[in-house]
Image (cartoon, rainbow, N blue to C red; front, side):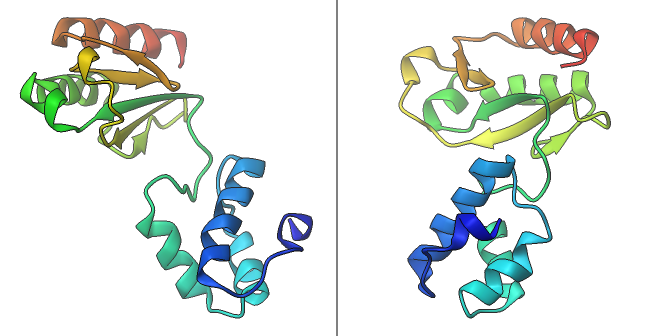
Length: 149
C-alpha cells in the first residue's frame, strides 16, 4: 500500500486520488488503509472516513462478484425504474447499496450517465441493459440468484 502513496502530498486533491488508487488496487479501501493514508496526508482518520462515505463510488468492503447498478436518473424514473428497483430488491432480498449474504450480487444506485435512449436501464457489471421491463428484471435477478452471481 505504501508504494501506491509514495508521491502524494498533503492536499485535498491528493486524498481523492489516493482513495481511487487504493480502490483500483484492492477493489475497495481496506480499513487498515485509513490510518496509513491519514498519516501520509497529515490528517485524521475521521477526515479520510468522511471522504470515503461522501463519495458513493468509494467502497469500504469488497464488491460483490456481480454488480447490478440501478439508474436513478430522471429519464429512467419517468419510465418506471422505481418498479424495477423494487422488483430487484424483492427477488434478491437486498436493498440499494447492499449485497447478498454470500457477496454474490450487489445492488447499487448510480446517477444518469447519458444512456437515456435505453431507459429504464440497469448496468450489469458495467454493461447497460435496457430498455428493461419489470418482468425482465425479475427474470434476470432470478437467473443471477440461481447461478450465484
